[in-house]
Amino acid sequence: MNVRLFPFISWAIITLAGGGYSILISMCKHRVFAIMPVFLMTVLTVLNSSYGVRLWATWNYSGAEKRPLWRVFEELVIPLHNTPGRLANDLHEANNFAFGSTRFFECVPHMVSKPILEGGIVNSAIGSMFSYYIQGETSDACAGFPNIMIPPAFNITNATKHLELFNVKHFIARAERTKKEFNRLNEWKLLRSVQAWNLYELQTHDGSYVFIPEYFPVAVETPQVKDRWKENALWWIYTPEALHLPFLFVKSKKDLQSIPSKTPVISEASYRQLLHSSRHENTQIREWLLLGPFPVPRSCNVPLEYNPIIEENISPVEGVRSGTYRWELCAFETPIVPSDFWRRKKGEERKSNAINYAFVYIYSPCDTNAVITFSTDSPVKIWVNKKALFNSAISTEQTSTLPVKLHKGRNSLMLKIYQKNENSYFDVNISACDNTSLKDIVVTTAPVCPVSVVHEAISDNKKQIIQESISDTKIRFHTKATGLPHIIKCTWYPNWKVKGARGVYMVSPCFMLVYPEKEEVELYYSTTLSDRAGFLLTMLGIALCILIAIKSIVARTTSE
Image (cartoon, rainbow, N blue to C red; front, side, top):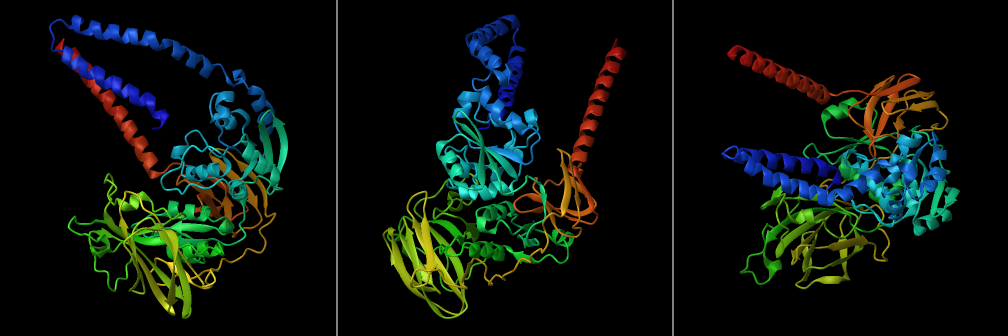
């Protein structure tokens, strides 16, 4: 539950209760006797709890300068007034005792005009997912993660790449492990230390928001029935090796027609394959087509012998139905299958004692021998090229190996898993016989081998942007590189419009991309059709209320 909603929820409950009680007492002859008990109970309740309210009000409105460790904020943050780049910090419980809240640093933009990574209304920002992810990489204790996201491990090396991506120039660290890692990396310079808090500066960039990427963007076309730009952006964030490669996420012909004609367009499968190949020696199969769960009849004594679908000669495609369900894409970083895939309908209970299927295509440039290494907590049956090669009625949590022969062209791998409990996991790797990565092997959920793409490099992307000016509603910059893609490290919204450039496009992960046609470019925050419709309806509502009031006054005057 978001605590910001508590006042509105409480007020709604009180209003509904008061309205309902007023209807009841309107039926009584002696209304005073019905009102007095409720009035006395309300007064006594408020008197008994008012002391805590006074303390809270005194604390909340006494000012930041009255906090126990205001000196820490004064010496670390105040000197950052109007410095370039953003400020970020690790989430630590000590901030709560020292400043009154673990999120105290969110007031920085209002006190010293220094943008931060995570704002107060983080849930409403489309960039919040990536702030959560970076927080997980830099903090011992995290606030939690959206269900769509795979929580990261603590990793300051990867976090440094992500912080530079989001134009973070300064970082305040409190946790000992975080400070130790920052001190170890040459990219970070310790500026000052006050009590247990350290302020660091990132030396790898100058804090500019507008830059020209190293490579021209590539467009990723997502299925129109499945708008997966968030998942696509997160897969990109999960792959630090590919952060220098920008991608546009489009889902309709209109979007495709609006982007520059020379922009290469690839499928989601090609995009995921490109990210996977960037990881070099990783042999884990990270994407599957999943189907299920199919409850096993009680009369079936051997669950893996229950066949809810026709298992022979199956070549599934995402979205195509087999039996009760449709094959759905699942791409994940860990062997634990997201539980939502084992309950297809919202609100449906997670099922146990059920059969699930996992399928993937493997494309090989030639006949070759390979080894499939797998483990699962459930009984499993495995097919390779539609031939059953493994069948175990007991769970195989210990790692097992399965030698296989891959043919030139398309091969298939299918798992049939008996899910005994609500949750299930399986981990499958494919490698050469010496456990190294198979070169030129493509593992994908696409029935056609994804087409590879090579990003075209931009030869001269340095020192082309002469000046930039950033505010809440306007972004201005002067560039000498007209025609080249320019990325602004600010969150894309449909409200952003541009003068002097073509755009504004959303580029990975959620930044803005423009192609300047003039040296002077200005982006400004405007209104959309829905905004204007909302304003119009509001004015009509106000006008209607005035007309009703006038009509009521006229009616009373006439009756008198």
